[in-house]
Image 1: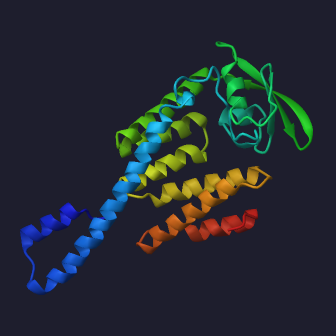
Image 2: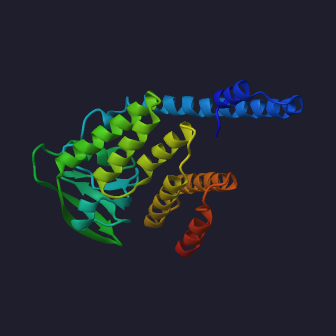
Image 3: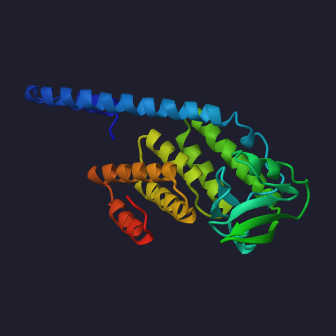
Length: 263
């Protein structure tokens, strides 16, 4: 995407034949519209960042790392490298963390149970349901990883509030590295920062699409939010391909068909 400033500088330096003026005026108007849309997009992202940095989850690290990604229904859709080594799997349902049963429909219940874990312990116990069987697992505390995740999460959203898009991408990558596998939450923010910078990243967006697909497969129930996010990502990839980028969407749709994910 060329900025209006670049177009104006080229005209000022080289001059233009009179017959080119209508075409350039059209380009100015089109570029002005794009710049305004990009600013509105960035403004909205900054507003989301200002809300995110005030959330309690980024105020301080958990006593131990949560080795999963799960929603309010406690179905695990992604597992950290350490969690996988300890036996946790996608599609497991969390039933107990430490000394707390997870009952009810409170979205924050498992996070509250993690906050209640004692400081300084080497491991903690979880109970899960896996295909109707109740299993007991012992997961490493990994307090350093919990701290890295919290600090990177806070730094990523702080970068968003400052419109520091490169720093947003850097700290998002730190979150992925600390967890040990790609998950949709940091990747979603990273793709948004890339777009807000005026340089949407098709390869990063395709990585987000694959993370969303894996999370959808892990959850047997309906996932309208994930499905809509995946549709939006595919449309964005289609637009980037139409603008001359690489075609990631075709192979992703083929992967979706193999996994039984409806478009």
